[in-house]
Image (cartoon, rainbow, N blue to C red):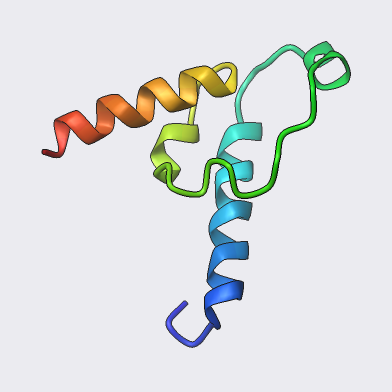
Length: 71
């Protein structure tokens, strides 16, 4: 990844987070009933926070827990 531009690194980081978020069981209907997110809103959260969680609120909670564990 070192050879990628900063924009490309951000794109890869977002894609990895989406991959983690979508690689878990979740309610399919929520995709159609929920509001659309905004790009970049969760860029500061670690990739691990997106794995095996439910809604984005759980991602935020897990990120906070991970931050506490690493401080």
